Each structure stands twice: as structure tokens, then as C-alpha cells.
Length: 222
Image (cartoon, rainbow, N blue to C red):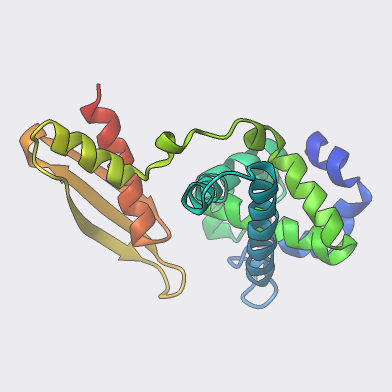
């Protein structure tokens, strides 16, 4: 069991019903799973990080604050923190998700962290949830990127290509799988003049396109 999680929350917390539910994926139970807690945790996380940025950067403009929040509260970062907490080892998954490596999937890990935040809130209140979140994001809040680093991958890629007279990227949807409310999108970014084709996979088409753009950007700047 994760030493860091035990240190932050205590061994007793890891036995309570809210924590158990937070670690239960919908592949185990259609009724008793962490989806509702994920919804609650996402809202709490957004408020706490927004307040931390607002208070910590009193002169920063709204646009910069919004981009900073997006750079912190996203699937990739939440999955990284879940891995740091070793949440994958504590997840309850259905047989299909276990076989496909669901305990390592970014979307599942990110959802589990949001559900865990909700569990802390439900068990110990808002102040405890706030301190838990701030402890998880402490280093990241100390090492915030500069404003120029926060342009989204699609904008960064387009500006780079335009400045060098290359074709603009073309994005297309390759596939959309899963239930209507929990789909997984695969998109493609193609730059014909440079013979570059990359793909992105995420729970929204926009995020998948951003992923594919980020991969393409890394290739064009090599």
C-alpha cells in the first residue's frame, strides 16, 4: 500500500466506505462505482487550484490564470499524481479492465484521484480536502510555467508552421469508441509538406487533437 497515501491520510482512512467506493471503477459495478464521486472531486479540485493561483499570483491576468489552471488540472497531471500515490494498485476493476491494463490507463487513474478528493471531502470536510490537494500539488504550484510556455499545442504548432511557410496541420477523427457518455476518441494530425502524421487518444475529441498536435510539434522542432 502507498506509503505516501498513508502518510497524507492515515491508515484508517483507507478502510472507510468512501475511500473504497472512490477506488471502485464502473467496470465492477454499474450502480456502486466512483463516477459520482469523480464529479464531486473534479469541482472541489477546480475551486482549490483556482484559489491557489488567484492568491499566489495577484498581478496575473485572467487568461494566464486560466491557462495555468488547465496545465495543472488535466488528465495527464492527475494521472501522474495517481501514480505517485500508487492508486493503480488500490483500484477495483472488472476483469476486462484488468486484462487490458486499466490500472495504468491515464483516464482511469485521473478519475480515481478526483474520486479520492471527494472521499476526503465527504469524510473530513472542505478544509481537509483543500490541504490534501495543496499537498499533492505543492511542487507543481512552486514551479509554474511562464505565460509563453502555456500556449496550447495546436496554437503553438500552427504558429511555428506559419512562421516557416509550411502547410497548416489537418486534423481528422479516426475513431470514437465506447458508450455515448464515456467515449474514447482517436484523432490524427497530418502535415503533408513535412510528411508527418501523428495520433492522439483521449476522452474528448479536443483533447485528442491537442495530443496529436503536441506530438507533431515535437517532430517539427527536431
